[in-house]
Image 1 (cartoon, rainbow, N blue to C red):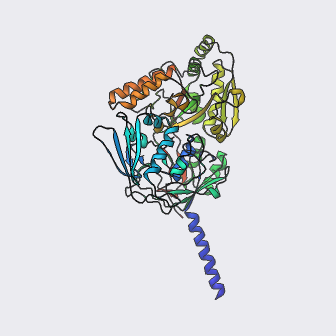
Image 2 (image 1 turned 30 degrees about the vertical axis):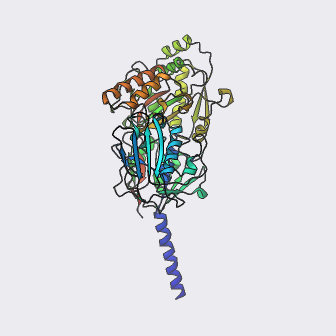
Length: 520
């Protein structure tokens, strides 16, 4: 009898173990998680981490319409100067404390100190005041056309809600308390940078009643745990997916997709059909890119197709597009860039000669472990053919994230440029596009400083006239061709590769793991 009971217990233990394992989703993300403050950096892996453990007041649906999320409702005064926000019932932080209006105000302020769109919003804000624990007001100095859109910003930086004690950390200082308000809890005790990050279901999270849609609606969690496993070698990650050791790869190499397509247990799905855009970001603080005309020379030396071929390779997944604010959207235009991004090396060299370029090296940060890292040698080659001297310095992406925040001179650990990409949802207009902001020390990394760009962005933000907004957006793009803050290098899509046992993934500008199920 004891043997029978022992056998039954052992069988039950095996079944329990299998059940637990079935509720653990293992994913290879596009990068390792080493920085965990989604306000301190715009890096997408940190934004993705933010969506795991924090919630937002407002959120966009799959049509990019802004919906209430932590809010029950909001109302606007007749003079358009006072917004009153009311939180819904049952909101808790991971430590059990209720989410309050004071937490929201502190979180908005910290986000706005780092985010270009937030800075524009706060420039028109007279005050934010808690009325009671669930209600706060935002009062404007003058009508501002993008209040709701700003607080519902879907991507980097996202106005995530943190406890007041955490949100009072200065925006330029990384937080050390990771108490969240969202559907997953970050297991700091299990976090192994270089190996994995672990997120457990927050059992006290109260989802909205509506069906989920992109980043909005009911964030119902059906998994006990999500593990982001770091496997930097793409082929090793692919093999792990094929054998079932992992369940999903966020950004597989395009070259590996045909192999996945032959396996009946693997699905290839694009959950971000709006796609992304490659870019080269300039640091304007130091030579040679402190000179706008020399940055113009870069625009002549580069071309989009070479970067798209290097990063994506398959024309099915990319397109050349000179529209800074994304082809196929209301503000798409080629204005200002008709003769640029064509690898006109003679024109690049002509400008360098006119501006007295003295051979100061362009220090390019080269991330060796991401898709965008594949673009850096292309940039080096094209810039050299355009007359530049280039110093390409290799490191992993997490080191790039730390290094790019430094303002030191080039000979003291500084930098001139780096390759990155933005999801298109981050680039749809002059305000949401962080790299277009040119507010000097308050601007995003690279710190461009141009009064004309800021005047045009202010005009765009304050009007609600669609025709005027289109006019201002075009003027911003023309000014970008004169005072470049970045070089935009084409649009692309990278689908997810996942096992067929994984279902429920949402169409969204950012990968999210609520609504996801994993079958036995």
